[in-house]
Amino acid sequence: MSALTLRVYGLLIHNGQILVSDELIKGQRITKFPGGGLEFGEGLKDCLIREVREEMGIEALDPHHFYTTDFFQQSSFHSSPMQVVSVYYTFRVADPDAIPVVQVPFTGITGPGDQEVFRWLRIEGSNPEELSLTIDRVVWGMVRG
Image 1: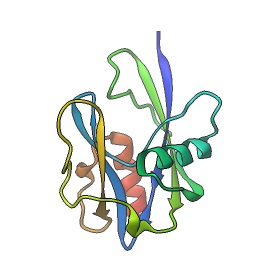
Image 2: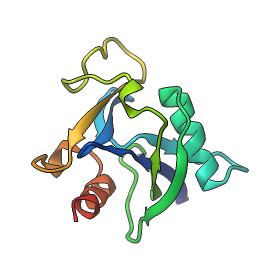
Image 3: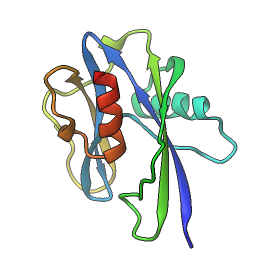
């Protein structure tokens, strides 16, 4: 049986940088845009606002649709057929400098269990290969223009 998962991600741009999340997910090191799975009964913008609140402890303000996946993408985390549809929103926060960030990827992630840290990635001069997920790399190209 095949399945579908809807994911919602946020693009927070500040001072020529974009926020990324370095996460340990099921034992894998993944660098991606902040966000996660849509819960049943939840709207897409509500999902983004919830994910930002849960992951960063701040409010996502003024979300605007940026991109929805328009190609087939198999989930990287499921061995059975699972199509991923990702929806990206730009958003802002009251004080981007108040977000706790690290300078070196995965700094402070230790031991088992899912964990994450955030860092700013320069939009100019950074390599899209720094992002782990195919869909995020497509969006990275769109952000860079």
